[in-house]
Length: 194
Image (cartoon, rainbow, N blue to C red):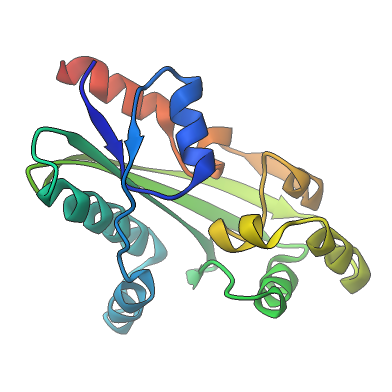
């Protein structure tokens, strides 16, 4: 199979690749995501465009130094009524994000990009629609108390594969997309690439 590098520090993304028998090694891009997001937001870019750009920039950055490999970049964002919700920087921010999503429908957008020799050769974006239950402040705080700092700050504010499922009354979309990696499409691409 083609040599693949995952340009992400997400343990969940690596686990998904492993589960689907896609051999990969991890090399983190260390891209300044905040600066990229701020720049794109100034240009009124949509959450989907921001997700696509971040996935591509991560893949291209790692790909420049690893020319014999395909490099997979990925990014996920939350879109609530056109507003971009980013990963929380601290527990107070996480609580504010949950309050904003509370009782409402939002989109989780996951974009992936494969680069070779520093250039994108394929990309894909998928969306899932999630409707959060109406929860009290105490219920939200209880949820946050069950999540480790590492998980809370590494991913979006909920982990659908764990405690996060309890936050939602309705989930429409692919579970791998919600976890940050629409792996079936990646697998299809790699099969055709060889």
